[in-house]
Length: 211
Image (cartoon, rainbow, N blue to C red; front, side):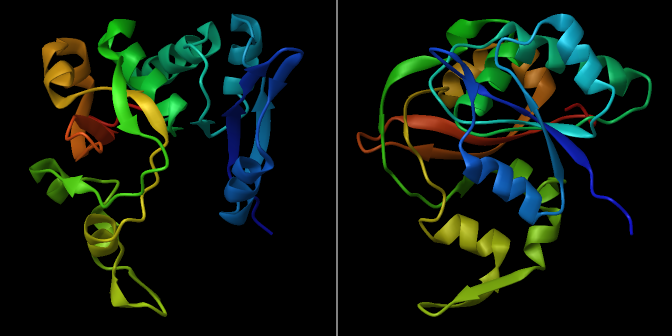
């Protein structure tokens, strides 16, 4: 029997070490992946050792600052891409913010003042979403529930309030556009606005096969 990919899960810090909600592990396992936990405060040698043994990474939600372990993993993924090895990284919530900060080469791209706690929204897809690798199969895969007619995943994401938001920090489209390294690294696939009408970037995809 073929074994699934191994995904490094970069944990969040606690007063006594690192932790991750079990839901993230179960989510990966439900998709057939095996999980390797990586401490938030892992040093370069630990990150490098894990990187060589896994097929991708998940950076989870929380409220922590960008750790050196994330910066090291991102650098390793970019270096691997340059020699033809694709290493995908998925960032959720805090992990998503880390990715944008690292790619921008400036942590100040992330700002506060968003009113988006406990706010489920449909995605406002951009023109770039049409050619996205991430969303390409979503245009043909059908989903449905009792209260909704069957529709494609793409239509569900763009019309139903099924993408959860729980944050007071984010990156505005204007700030995204101000940082050339970020624009060079990522395409914006979707944006949203918070309760006060303040826009934020909600979905990106790396360009050129980068992580």
